[in-house]
Image (tube, rainbow, N blue to C red; front, top):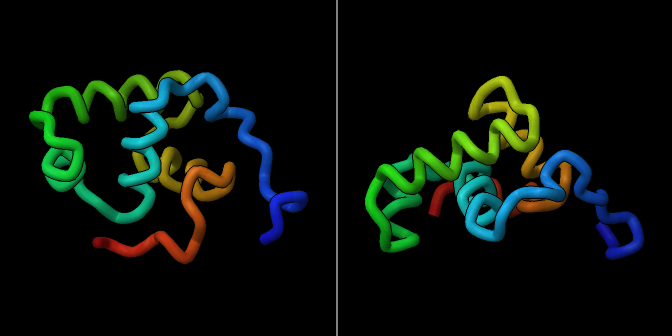
Length: 83
């Protein structure tokens, strides 16, 4: 996908930088625990960021948030593997 064809974020536009980071890592297949380890924080802030990101982007559940992160270009489909 070229830069001109990249999806424009709409529902994720108002996420904080940290909420975007968490959504990106979640969409890449990481668990909350793995995200916490990767970011060097405890589990609770990750859970809070996921909940805030879901609310701000109007996602009914975590799966919808992950799909939205890919759709809106927060993570490419090639990044969608655990790592």
